[in-house]
Length: 235
Image (cartoon, rainbow, N blue to C red; front, top):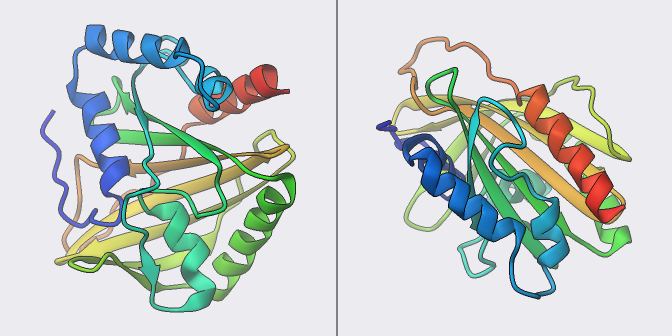
């Protein structure tokens, strides 16, 4: 599947994972997910085991990857909006200790792509992150995230009801625009103990130019399965 990446500069890592999930063969996805599910002994072993693997969610190809803390951190043009820029960027905020990524490409709806990113925190930091995100959604109906050479503008940021398990969660929708290309985005962040899972969904196959586009939503089968797996594996 060929995917247009224009307008996704700040979502670059997520778009890369998702493009891989949509475009790779099922066999290669199986191998990648299997390697991630049985990694060598590292501090992130349990987190890798808790992440989705190929076959966990029928109808999706799963691509395994990692989020490098060396990637450029997006900078919001307003301080209160920085938590949103972090979550919607290609790396977690600096308080995250370990992070693993999964990209899921729908085999039923062309262009629908999801990232599920798991990060471990100190428990107080995980709780504060969710509080900060709620405050940022309320304070930032629009903002710009800068990566130095590129920037993305987010508009129509608003809280969005979304029922999901976990200890607490926050959900919002937005549109990401760059070079006149608008892409609807839906983000759900769930805290389970000291683990934070961020889901981001966008339609990579049909960006619009100045016209309305059908809103996207984090698929509930993906979100429910991932949260259940985190609870079962990590406790």
